[in-house]
Image 1 (cartoon, rainbow, N blue to C red):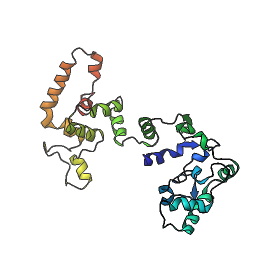
Image 2: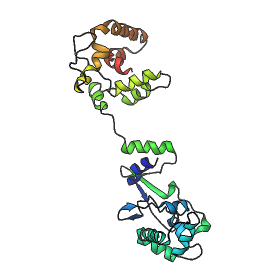
Image 3: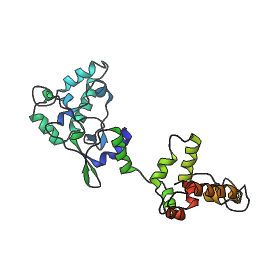
Image 4: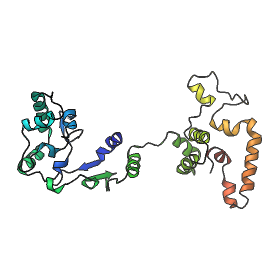
Length: 268
């Protein structure tokens, strides 16, 4: 989930204001960096000091003193050195944006509001259009796919070969849960053109020729393996007759324009 969020964060805007500034996380936050690097200090995290509010007073403006931070950390690890704590605390303070520091030094921590940062605090832009932040994991990953997903290389091949083919439906039907696992795996290999035909094996230097080992007459590419091999002629003829009989009540225009090669490879 964190890796996925890192892919999306460039599309997310977060505006710190008086209602949420104390709830902002200190660590692994791109807005709080030291020389361009994210902060990460395990003793602070283990002690529960993870947000801006954990560094501030509750009844007066300003940040806690160094000795107060050291006392909090010492409750979890008595061996921590005061100088080490002070050094990192200084790094945290200088890493905070100046406007945050100014606001905290002038305003009291609104702990009584029990405010939490939610998705509503963020704005999310896709293709320069602001959209609601994802409220569920499914929506989040759908947006992630939309932003960083890439179409398989094989798509351009199939679209050029079968311009009317709806690949989105092929992906769905080829992976139906009712299919045996071996069928789904084979469907995936066909759709993505990853099946190791002799043509592909020759390109990988894993064979010395690309001739079909069954008919020994032609190059064995994907189409030859499933459709054009002469040893498959009886089966392909049977399949065509079966489809014609099955579609006896189907519109003639559909039957006449049906590409049987496509039907063999990609179904309907």
